[in-house]
Length: 169
Image: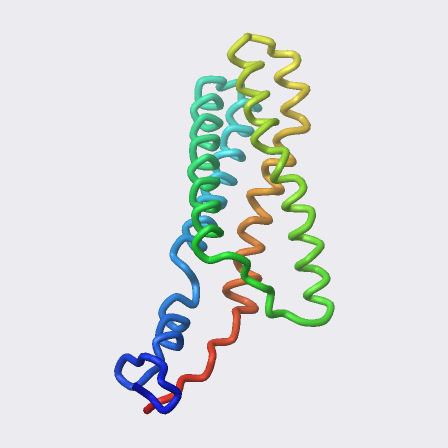
């Protein structure tokens, strides 16, 4: 034990060891990777349909939906385990971060409904309505996927939480 009666590992308080080891929780990084993959799949699906390859389009969009669903499970798990992580940046960059975060959250709420709507229309063969909704859905889904990666970079890589000073006893 150290002088403050805080359990220690190799002389370092446990909370300091945990903070340094888990500076970026693995699920936070997983979420960013899943968002990046979803972005690539969405772009691939769009390119495929522009080229008239509806089978490849369908495969890419189903994969994007699956990846986004896995992301949602990981995201909810992460926030259940870790809770809120405050942004460490200050000044103008904080305003930029909050603007990105707020628009990301608002639009992210719509993505599951829009994506499911797209699948329902496709399943029913309602191609005109599917295309009309796709013009709205794709930019929103892309924005949410891209800003998810941007938020991760800003929150955990560019402006990470300061690691509390360690106390060696």
